[in-house]
Length: 157
Image 1 (tube, rainbow, N blue to C red):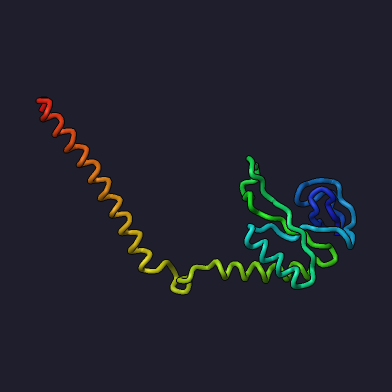
Image 2 (cartoon, rainbow, N blue to C red):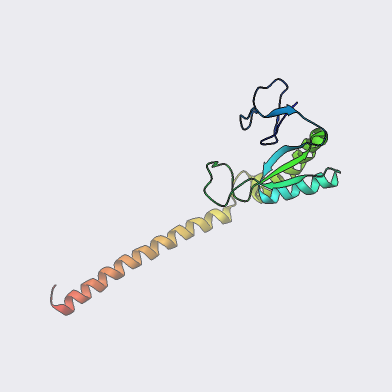
């Protein structure tokens, strides 16, 4: 496997340039190289980090995003890149996959088994829309009535 000195990603042997950043600064991956494992939001990165440490792998978390303008629309300022020692990459990938699956299960809505949002939520959203429309109507009719009343006081209508 080839190690990219610039972005720390792994490329296949014989690759002329890095598959990630297109750099030509490749060399054979060494046992001590910290290589890219995955990118995750702050919460998932914390879960993956904890799972890796539990498995005896020492990961490194590095901010993937920037608080300033970023050309990468898929990266949030809170995203984290996770790097692991090259010799533990296979084990780290399995451990990270399990941790990410666990995070995805945590994030599933409670009513996912029923195939959609609960009836209470739908009724609440419909009532909110109706209340909003009533408020808009009251504002329009109120402003119209006030304008007519002022016209009557001024003798304009």
